[in-house]
Amino acid sequence: MKKHNTLITNFREIPYNPILKDRAKEMRNNSTKGEIKFWCELLRNKQTGYQFYRQKIMGYYIVDFYCAKLKLVVEIDGISHLKKKEYDEHRNAILESFGLKVVHFDAQDVQNNFCIVEKNFKEQLSKRINELSK
Image 1 (spheres, rainbow, N blue to C red):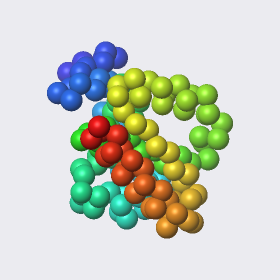
Image 2: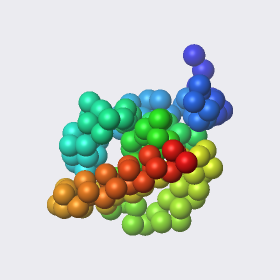
Image 3: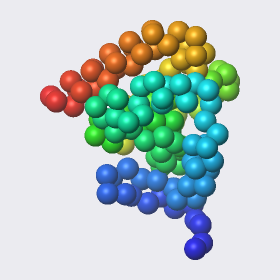
């Protein structure tokens, strides 16, 4: 099967680039410590009551976590994001153009201040549920 750089729209109307499938799989298998902790402590096995997916392809990007029902993207930002502020802003704008909400958490905070991150995430989750119910 020939890989190409064309976006495909899936049944949820979020386009994706199939050429990123191998990279997304690699990223799932080599998650950062912050991503692993966030996944295991908050998202795995529908602990929030919602299904989240890891390393989901969205357009030309791979997001850390995605909940289709809430149209919610969760990013765990490591040190590399400090130098990519403009890139991240552009990426967020593209993702938001799909009707998605993007929330970011610092990887160091996930590792060292998890209680605060968990509280903030649950507030963001509740806020998003309310936004979509209007």
